[in-house]
Amino acid sequence: MTHNITVLDNGTTKIEVDFSDENVNLRGETFVKGGETEALNYLPIFEQDLRRNYSELFPKPEPETIPEGGII
Image (cartoon, rainbow, N blue to C red; front, side):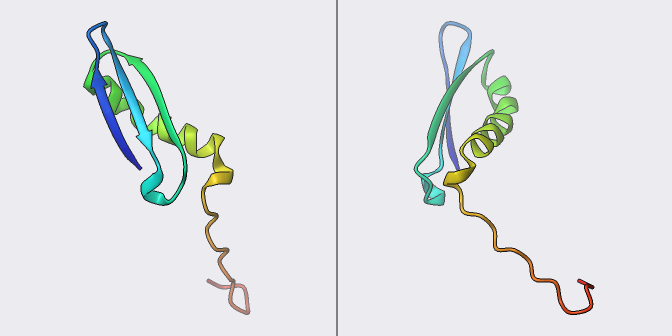
């Protein structure tokens, strides 16, 4: 995921994220009140929300195989 943060003159900051580096066609943007610090604090939450809300776009991890005997 790549992101871009733009501090605006009105006291808000725009967060833009792009998942094309993960071969996922998804971009998102949101606005937060405050500056770059507030945007950077919110960025992981915004990313998690997008990944959860659009989970069908992201590749699923391969299931782990349990060896015979059930001990990993």
